Image (tube, rainbow, N blue to C red; front, top):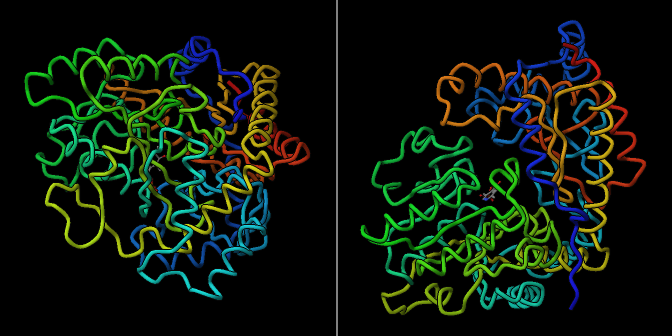
Amino acid sequence: MTQQYGISEYPDVDIVYAKLNALISQPIRPVNRQKMKEYLEYFENKCKGSKLLIEEAKNFIPGGVQHNLAFNYPFPLAMEKADGAYLWDVDGNQYIDFLQAGGPTMLGSNYAPVREKVADLLKNCGPVTGLFHEFELKLAKLIQQHMPSIEMFRMLGSGTESVMAAIRAARTFTKKKYIIKVGGAYHGWSDPMVYGLHIPGTGRFEAKGIPHGASAGTKEFYPNALGALKRQLWLNRFRGGTAAVIVEPVGPESGTRPVPKDFNQKVRELCDEFGTLLIFDEVVTGFRLGLGGAQGYFNVKPDLTVFGKCITGGYPMAGGVGGRRDVIATFAAGIGGTGERAYVGGTLSANPLSCVAGYYALIEMEKTNAAVIAGQAGDRLTKGLQAIIEKYSLPFVAYNQGSIVHLETSGTMLLDFKNPIRLLKELKPRKHMMEEMGAAYMANGLVTLAGSRMYTSLADTDEVIDDSLLRFESVLKECHE
Ligand SMILES: Cc1ncc(COP(=O)(O)O)c(C=O)c1O
């Protein structure tokens, strides 16, 4: 089968890094103060309903908000309606939605053909029985059809859980100790993975409440530093070995630090040299880059693949791990296991609702060629943003991997621990600028991911993208020197 992918042209990574390095070597260029004041007034004047709800929520919910990706400056907005490319808040304001719930809604929000299948299932079966349902099999077979490396598939509840499970299977199978990740990569919030989180080189910096032992078997290496990876693999060999190397195949934080195109192949070769399993975390890239995932696009076969997000088309609960039959077989469920198995479970994992939603979401993505269309929208958005950056001689950087679009204005995500003094000095102001940019876009009717990333979907027509570009321009042109 010929696969189609949403990346029409892989970014020239050297050029991207040159621009990103130039961006973080100069002072920040936030929206001018007068304009920012006006944008903040938008929230006070037009978002009164959200404000009331959030004030009350703060008494019941820590911080008043439960999503890490939620935009929450100056205060979070409460959404009421979602349809296709748009969201509406409780005050009736409309937004173009480039958050896409953090990535799962590739078909656009609340896609009717999937919703109808979910509703049919609910009528007959409800969301859960705790027993086997045929759609578990249908989904597993469909995934294998598109990703041949997935000889077996185990559905789970989230990306975080699935990373945990993949690590456990890798250790059970190889009987080795270490897991190596890329510094800055996000693999969910399990104990061993809250290590080198967001910012490369920071190790246990974010590991509040996590005992040392829980991440004692985790190591990180700087993004794209294959020599450092090889050194770590070599060192680990004398201390219990490396069970697996886990990567986000477009680069940490969904390609915020993009990988050179041959990076994954080189990691594969190193894993083979050291008898280590390769885990692709395709929570974001799985089905978004194309039905064959990043592994199809890069033509690299991982031993294990972690899924989330798109695997249920935006419905709960989105997670799964698949791969080599001999490794995945360590999960065999049911009463009477051998004691050799890697323990995984979950009351609601592989429930019929998630499986039916996932199955029909993938069928619809195939029918509509969603990854390619969303990728074209990503290209159009990126080209438009690059033109705006050039027009106003801004130091900002826009690039994309298909429907994953990056717009770096503050460069926060590019700081690292190699230069701890700069990190200490610049993290706070750059983070604040990122928040401000998110708020400025929002006040102009654009929902982004943390003010620096956009996911495009099947619903993003040329008209939607062109409308969004006008809105982006009105913000970006206010970032004077
Ligand atoms: C690459 C990657 N891995 C794992 C996760 C965790 O998935 P979940 O939020 O479903 O636990 C995420 C979530 O954003 C992710 O982007």
